[in-house]
Image (cartoon, rainbow, N blue to C red; front, side):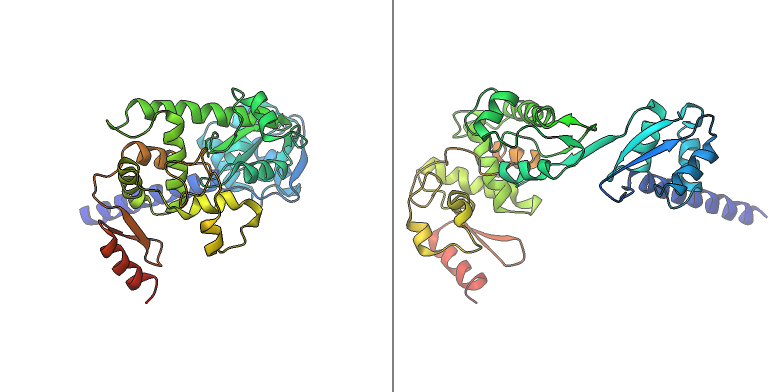
Length: 330
């Protein structure tokens, strides 16, 4: 009898954990409304069950009961309000509940991704139908006059994250949030940086972080990549990093770097110029910033891709040449 009770107890526990995990997944999964936005109406004096049925009938939900259960668990049932709402296609059930709770149109959302350029960031905003667009005719410098401190170059000054906002929020408002977020996180990280780093300012650390972001997608390698570049800066060795070449090529880059591209001198050609490039080359994430400010202690001066996304690190040119033969010329 005791064994049966214990077995029943554990079955209940497992069931509760499973249901809780599924509810979290359900609450955060976008509903993928089609088309990009949808207007809905919730009738006055509607119960929770009636609201769920209306959402199913209007094509927002596939089933009633998960939404009803979520509302009951979060104790939102007494506070849901009737009215007209405009739903963004990326809205999830939790955001939908909050919108019905607040009695106003749902939030839009946009995600800025690590390693993307400001040009790509602007295009992503232009394609978002929930944003009120005002900057499409402005240059990057003009945008920075509005959202930043008048910096001439926008690259790398915005923090990659998902931002939620009320529909028809100005694009400049969203950009300013991202800009201020980056300034806050960069300065906080700068205050705890390792000693004796060869940076004259937080901005130079941001430049390095952007290079690290583009050099590797392996989180475990970021500090080592930083260590190699720090070692090169300290001895006056050129960085010789392909992502800066690609950035300097702009629209002329079509997937391959040719020998003449390596020899062509531009402000971003770290094969022909010493030190850091003049600006970041992409939007670095917080992990890349931390790596730039806390590089791994290493004697390595070289690294080469293994072909699987990871790199082999070498302390001298002879070791590096052997690694190139092994991983690139095999």
